[in-house]
Length: 183
Picture 1 (cartoon, rainbow, N blue to C red):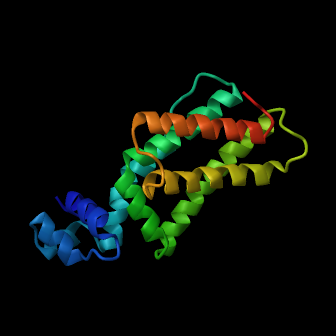
Picture 2 (cartoon, rainbow, N blue to C red; picture 1 turned 60 degrees about the horizontal axis):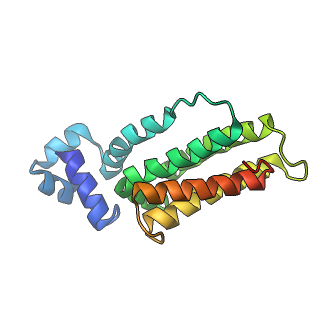
């Protein structure tokens, strides 16, 4: 009940506008019950994100060793994951602007994603005129910022499966073109 209440309130009111008294009131429990499970509002946010973060650790297994297939799958998975957990993505992003530990968690997750992209770039015959580390960081930044603006902030046309597939296809084409692996 506490997790459901916190998730709803964080999404509706925002992380910083939601207090522990708001959460316990919405959950229909006392403050003691809250503190039996969580030490703070931040702790409940971390508990909400744990299943999502654990799922991100287990990327789908892809049988193809083709870099283009792997890039397209990674992009599609990333977009789908954010659309599936849209409210939590909004809250997590907002909280990271004010909470150093959450911000550091996002940086570590980004660094892992950059390393996966860099590993793929290094394993392929990519354009020799690009710095592979810069390319990996720039491609990941493009994906993150696009996802945030297009789906989380709502700049895109929608959040349907078709919208995710269209965005993933276009981003995949851009990534492959950028590193010289046109399809």
